[in-house]
Each structure stands twice: as structure tokens, then as C-alpha cells.
Image (cartoon, rainbow, N blue to C red; front, side, top):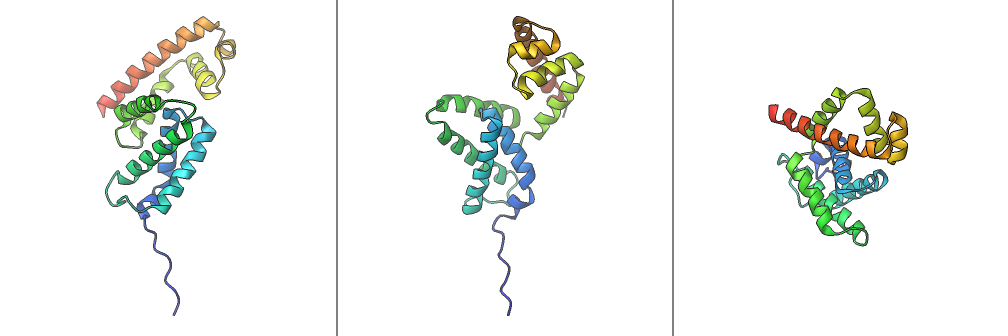
Length: 172
């Protein structure tokens, strides 16, 4: 008689692993993790999830709620000497307000649509600042602005994106 194959205790986790991975990575970035730390923490979260069995993957949203809570705790543990729990709580509140208990896919879709509406110069400034991590001087050099011009432009861009995202999410 052949042995039975092992039973996956959390098929909901495996079935949606890639989507959960992307959403967890975004969540950790919102909390303040750099891209490398977010990658590492996502791996740790999945290890914890595979070792533990205290979530019900048959309940919609339960898997991501468990993963997000685990990610938050691992992030806090990694930050004990670098930041305060209040800063992480504030970032978590931003996630809750914009994404609830979900993975934030609607918010990301709205953000992408709003960024597409921007002029090329504004998209370049956003990419230089937030995508490439350039400082104000380097980002300004790309678009022909001084440091104060970059600061003012980014403030206006963030306000525009905030309003645009809110409008798109209200329509849905």
C-alpha cells in the first residue's frame, strides 16, 4: 500500500500565495519597510503561516487578516530599536482607512489610474522621488526644478493623487 500524500492544512494560503505576497509586500512598505526588508519579512510571514494552524482559510479574508497581523508583528519586532510602535500604529491606521482588511488591490488600481492621468513631467518626478529614491536635488535635475520646486510639486501631486484616488474609490 502506498502512503497517502500529505494534506495541505491551508489550501487557501497556497491557492492565493502570489496575491497575498504582493499585498503583504505593499502593506509592509506602507508601514515603512524598505523593499529588501519587505521581501524578507514576507518570507518570514509565510513560514509562520505554514507552521501555525490558528486561522480558518475557509473564511473569506481570514487568510490575509492572519498574514497582515503576522507581518505587522514581525515588522514591529524588527524595529524595536529604530522606531516607535506609535509610528507603526499610524501607518497601520492609514492601511485600515484605505484598504480595510483587504489586500489593497482597489486602492492600487485607483492609484495607477490617477498616475496615468498626470503629465509626463509629473510622472517622471514621482518615479525619481518615490520609485528610484532620488533626493530633491537629483529628482529636480531630471525635470528642471530646484529643491523648493520639487518640494512644492510633490505636495501638489500628493494632494491631487489623494483626491483622485478617493473619487475613484467612491465610484466603485
